[in-house]
Image (cartoon, rainbow, N blue to C red; front, top):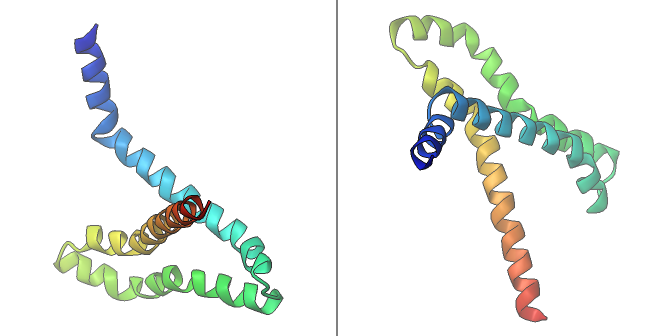
Length: 115
């Protein structure tokens, strides 16, 4: 029984299933951030113009990657840069998710030490 559990964990933690789980995590994390960001900005005292500016800036990077597609496809034919190109698109989102988690942990730790 233990051997089959280990094999199941190995199967779930490596390969295509793990990539799908990570892809879903980052996709829905970015979608959640985009949908909840206006509420957060409004809570900080921002108006509609601030919300529009921040949401516009949030999507500038992916749109700039689409503009680079005209250059990226011919370069990809010569040098296989596809993996690095897509990693560059998801890295800012992942970095932001990690930064927010660390910031929230620091806030909780500060509040716990003050209490």
